[in-house]
Image (cartoon, rainbow, N blue to C red):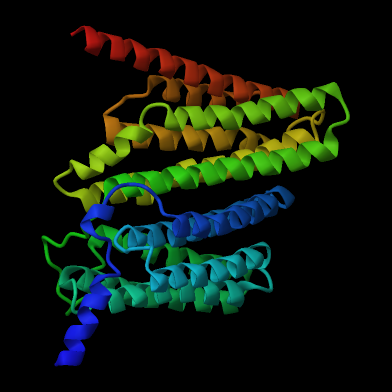
Length: 399
């Protein structure tokens, strides 16, 4: 009995204390995030090399997997004290696994399928088992939630492993099923027959922390775009036109940063912390709402690679989809986040998407012109929203 009592306070110390409920990401979390720079670079390089229909489906599965691994880890570190050595060791172990996962990404739908599936499932299940260890006997609500989550992840891992052993087309089907299972879990509170589901179960989340972590991930994606663009530009900086395209590509990245961070991002944490059902709002804003933003930035990096390496070429449909599709996805995600967090109807974003989609119906445009047009649309959206927000602020102040 004495032994049990001695263990529980030690485990309770692994949980985030009340004075740690702020939104500041800790150094171990930031260190963990660095792994995903490599993973995103691998994803964008893989897409740039093969941008066919099948490759797009494969890339979508991989982006969904990488994002889900990261966001699930972020939800757990939202509850844990990352200054404790054992929690840091968990993050370092997942970092190592994340690097191996990133190395396997280019061949995930070829010879490294089993390796990718094994590493991904090991990280997901291992992290959840650690959560069970921490919460057992300390926090019954969270223990029940993570117990049900573990069941869902073990179930999805069957599809991951089966897909890793299957041929290409069957692998796509099985891994798609695995993704569907994992993304559906939170929507039904990881329901498992026989395991209690409390209607009032709450994770005790810090909206400020989740908002900052997602913002940092967006910065990672934007930084990856800068790295990819700079690398490609250095290989093709042989004319004044290349410099113009590079300037537009760089400007697009900066404008995406501006559109995301200038107004709505600061309201995201307030929305979660002030909500009657914070977990439900957090899932909408972070788990699912940020996904189009992240995917859009990655696709933008691929489009910029095309426009820099073949500036004078007439755009093919796949190249047009990359250059235009990235900003469209990003703006669509920004619309969702801003409407959910600030009840802001971003007319500028809708107009920007309409103009970008309209470019798809202008065949024969050279790649450099598409890149310039894409940057111009993002500039229009940023200026339009800036003026609307400032005008609204002046009106509220005057009232």
